[in-house]
Length: 234
Image (cartoon, rainbow, N blue to C red; front, side, top):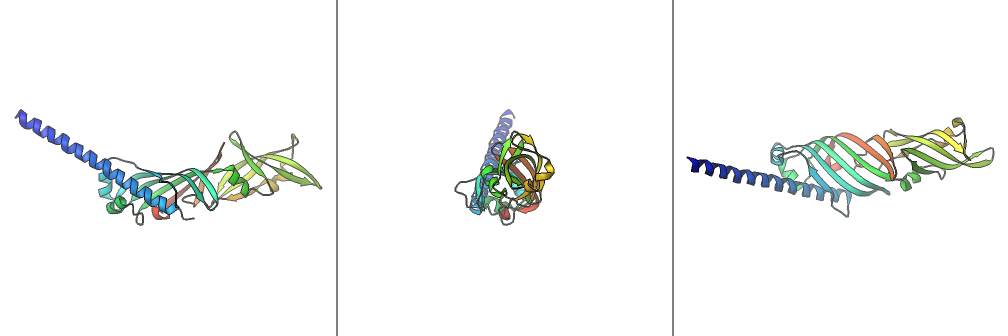
């Protein structure tokens, strides 16, 4: 009796180990294939990191629905704009098992998807009007540039807010100084208010959040019912 129990226990451990190994291998194969697919879409010179969340993987694969798939794209150059630390998170992904294992994204759809990337200030400056320069001052954003009043040109510095507005970022001045002295905001509001289109982000639908970082603007987007095959569509 004891021998039979020990034998059953050994078989359970062996089959359990095989199941776990199969789960790990299956997850790794699917992640690698999806990574190759994304690299081809974006014409990357590197392979992004893909992580399929949730355990066990094989149960999700059999159901054809995955809790979450995270994609660390890294650096990306889109439409002349350099993006860094580019991340995509897909939740509630529906995909046939065979497609996931082959990395075929043509039928993969996510209930919700978010993306985030950092746009460096060199690229932000390209969108600023009249030679203005943008830089971070702590958690605030500063715009510096020339402004003329009655034929006299001064270098004006404005502390501004950045607000998401559809597929653009709206820059609005809050305080303005020239030669260290405060300038009435009404005088320069129009000149220092501008919108910057952001067409290069993955899932480039609506911008949901903009944060000022030392290295650039961290821009996030959200979308629903997104096809993995159209992540780079704008």
